[in-house]
Length: 459
Ligand code: TRP
Image 1 (cartoon, rainbow, N blue to C red):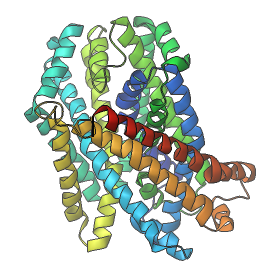
Image 2 (image 1 turned 120 degrees about the vertical axis):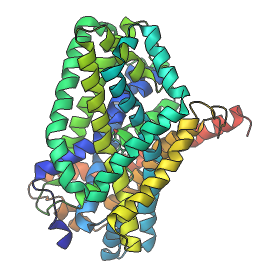
Image 3 (image 1 turned 60 degrees about the vertical axis):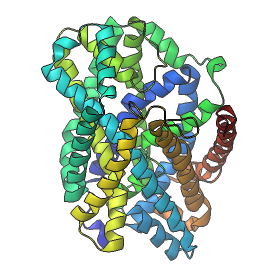
Image 4 (image 1 turned 90 degrees about the vertical axis):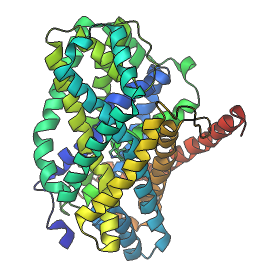
């Protein structure tokens, strides 16, 4: 298998890189604010169920497809399908992933730009962060300034493109080896701080006491979408990394470790952020600004707040960076293989497309606030379409492909049945039944949601 000769230097490098992909803005920025918008505890329970029953099987399916097929996700799927005598149409699954990657990267880079802007502000304009009101104001000033956001969005897209252009493996291994453990430690320290200085008991109740009265059916889809988003599933990120795996590495335990690490980081982020939100009487449901406003407020009340704040946002930016690389890679791999272009050229084209879409998201926080698609502004629309429609649909098709279409004996062989027999059976059954049925039901529900949106906004 030629594609494996350039593989990860060890199994743990794959685990770290995939964890680097999974852990990012999804855990620290998105998880708390989507939890806040969906009422807290009950959402967290449903989220955890989605990770276990849907996310884990799809993760394993992606690693398997990547390792088996090799190359970019579009071609990995194409190769596996043709080896197994399946329809050529399966490559559309890969193509949808490429499209989802563009959409996600476009707004991801804008939000990562906020994190970069905060890093800089903590370094040089720290005295501005002295009260909660001032913090709110700083956030509004940032989001009202299209030029400032464009600057940071461009900067972030450039650093993402540079790594992907150089080939992800070398740079990435070195980065994640040191940075992921530091990020984890920082987060642990913040949880500790929040437990002493914040309203920890309210936060625990809010996050872990399921209050199903506050849970609406639309939260089901939000939880599923968040599981896909946070675990980097449904568009080929993990598949692309799986392509560099040696055939001997165990797939199941790798998938389990990545999913577990990602979930722990999300919960820790919740435990770092909500105590501060409640201690300052802020609203948990304030949307995408939640983390930026509340954490900045927390830091400004903290001894050595400037140092902590600076390092935290720096690490958050880096975590976003190790994730955005995996968002760009599937598209670059595909463009490169398809047109026989060089990596840098493919990167400029793919990164350029995502950069242009990102401008739409920037404008939806200021000049273009009132431009609505299905009642959502451009940023919200990209987020909804990618996270709640394309990723679950991609995950559904991956589960069907691996669970039903591929030869079962060969899938079992890939999963190394002899070593992990019982678990394999269990995971395989959830790949066959639980994951597809779960996603399908929730997607149907989302059609109801679309109906709701269209009647509400008179389309
Ligand atoms: N999982 C990353 C985060 O939590 C973002 C991400 C990277 C992603 N690759 C992805 C999301 C693929 C969906 C699909 O920040």
